[in-house]
Image (cartoon, rainbow, N blue to C red; front, side, top):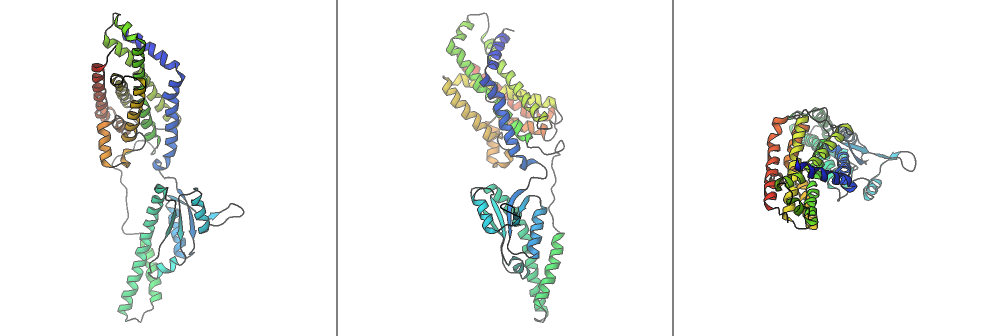
Length: 409
């Protein structure tokens, strides 16, 4: 109980500090909200289309079919007309270039004049992407989609060329190459509409809930990152007590050193638990994020994160000598672990060696693995025990080293 008096004193001091409340609750809430909406196009089922200026200089049946096919994918929103400055009119290549130059769009598609005729006769032709070289992600998506359609058109064009050549050989040049080309092209189009080879996606794991939700990445990701800032608050508290000489007075009282340290750690442990519960509650009630099938699992993972974060606080306080050192080193460690460990973006987009490194040197990677199992796949307590166990082991190691190195004078 004597530890509790020390903890209660620190809790009252912590929650009287408006700056600390803003840092612990408001700042991370704003960051995870912005990140959640920013990543919504990457997660929601039926992704939002990318707006792309579209210029058809050919106006052939093939170019119109290409435009219809691109529209049907729903991955692109083709802007083939302009309404500014008067009635709607067709987009021109010059206007598409100007739109990219002023930064309103990152890429545009241009179908050159004569495209359809060259496809019909089996000649080489091309589709043009106008692009902003500084925005690689959007243009890569556009290019990938367009290359898929170009591959289909190329197949039809090759089929026309081969069929025409073979028929002309078989008839000793007596057949009409124009009629053969048109007939072969129509047949190729029909076969490509219902292609004999298609692509099918099959989920290896069943996603829990009704939809893919970006907040299932951003809420736990940034919650873990800002929970780690407790090492900065906790470490500062330890250094303040040293600077003010509080420890010397406490050591004269009938209280063990372990009780003093426990009393200093408990308020920050409680704060992280409250912080995590607050973020998940906002995610659920404000952003309608589904919480999976195990509230107990979420509490266990949050507790493990709180243990790891608060234990890192005493470890840092045992290593550094000044608050300036603590601030610079802690912020560096927190940001490095968060960026490497998956708090800012999913780990499945980084190279394999970085994923391995993240699980070697960060708290975040293990925490987010556990939260992903709970939120995305609806798993239970038993499934996240390995991840929680690793975090508890990290906490035990940091606490052990911190207590061993800590000096009260």
